[in-house]
Image 1 (cartoon, rainbow, N blue to C red):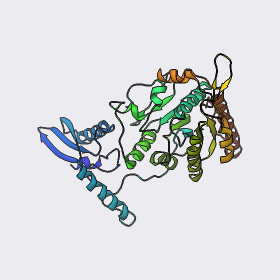
Image 2 (image 1 turned 135 degrees about the vertical axis):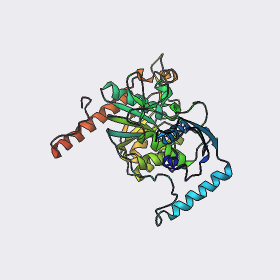
Image 3 (image 1 turned 90 degrees about the vertical axis):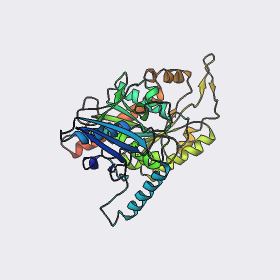
Image 4 (image 1 turned 60 degrees about the vertical axis):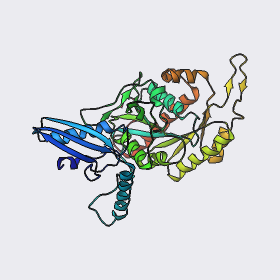
Length: 376
């Protein structure tokens, strides 16, 4: 039990002993069995916790084998735990010892990542994952080292559209090694961790916050020029966690022509402004359909209004992307990297120009600048 005090619950960030998760320990001739009560059934991080328990018990070298069994806390036990955490949170400002809540929403560092850009929209189904994946592909084509973090825990799609399968693993340095696409883009998504990707993620806010932070901080991204973060729709816990936790260098807003979408997207723009996140601009997706026979523009979702929306919000308009059946086909086949969009390509060029300008400014202030060029 003493050795297990150093094992932290991966979702709450506190000792499993303090959280009363250790339910039974048996020792028989050096063979140890530990029973742990998980706070969430079918937790995707259960294997991480099991490994941590095994390592902690084996640490002194006097144990032959370790077996970890899991169960799940009852509703009553979870409610009691919630009340304990709330009480500890209230007292934490004056009392430093005892049980406290999980990690706060402090800003995390960048490590080897030059630029972190979030792709947001208040409305679902406007194509954030499409813009994220194609922009990542365009940047990779220019020679940059690129990573994509899928922060949409309840509707993750990045791994699918980029054709990434398999399970991430722990590297020699202890960090989780992200998987790579065909072109070499690094990808991390909750779907890559789940035993069954078709099972829903049914988590409350505090767990969502913790998992998003882990998907960023516990992953060994290495040296990246760009990390693109695909956010879920809305302005609730997950987007707020990204805005508060990640050192964002910019935000790209995605909209579609419908008036309803414009109204809801405005909420995300205002959220980014309130969080002091630089807005790089707005792109309108599915703006029109070009007839393959006559070449006419068919406005399936109404009159394009992206430029007008961007003007009303005081943000740059990055362009209108047409509706293209090839996008759905390549996404379903995990081959979206093969798609090329002039509008998204222009956004990639704009990011490159911004980076070059920042590097020049830095070079004037420092003897050696941290270049954003692919060769650095």
